[in-house]
Image (cartoon, rainbow, N blue to C red; front, side, top):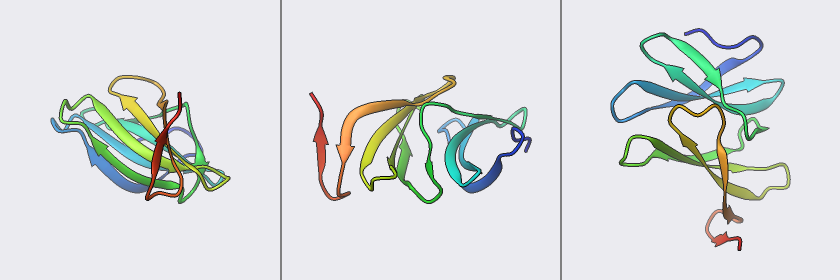
Length: 109
């Protein structure tokens, strides 16, 4: 699999329901990012919109529509936020849902 310069694949990975997209954790300079891999081409694209210390990526999963991926990430202050990736996008979107500690969630106005 080809990855952008300076990024290394850390794993794990999550295939989209149709198997065409593989989302993986990539690291660069000690920061974790999400990378979308076009399975047919074997090329990865690092997604913007977030980045955490390696190990700060906690929970994840594809929605049943096969187009939306949800995940939580812990920031440098130890708090968490739910993010979404919409298939085909170049970046992720931070939702208004925060999770801190990870057994309780709240939604910002």
